Image (tube, rainbow over all chains, first blue to last red; front, side):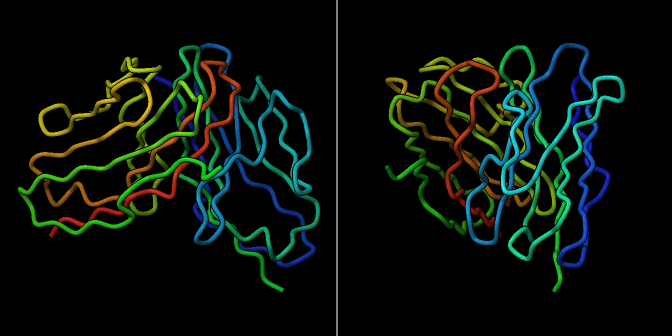
Length: 108
Length: 115
């Protein structure tokens, strides 16, 4: 069965420092991968997806099929980046599955 | 556009009582998901609909949980009877197609507390 693993429950970084959230997946087929974000008191929303290959709010994520990873990166963290981040995978049948999430706290 | 609408936002019930959650997806979205999110964990899929058909309900505890999506629009999720372990946030989401890259839009969730 497919699985999404986010090894860090909490990441605390200083404003202006780089931040990297790790995501590893296990899936025998070709997955679609996403990062979703939940800001305080807001609903869960899409941040970016690997098929778009775009940078959103300064974040990028690269799919590494060899390492089965989809890590999220931002070179300079901002206070407004403080949120809960979830890595997610869609399998061949359209099932959307989430990791346990990483809480990011950016301190000034 | 209000987005995905869920009600109620909060519900407190005693164990063994029934409870129902309602979800109105974004207009035109064929795919509807129900997730359960326990404290400190990611959302876990309970059931997925394509129009009115449940295409994935393998994670739904069918002895006490049921769901329906009449006419392929609104959906309800029911628990009967509720247990203490059912306390969680129940999330509804919808997306526009079975395209695996399609974005899922989430509701605000219903926070259930079973006492």
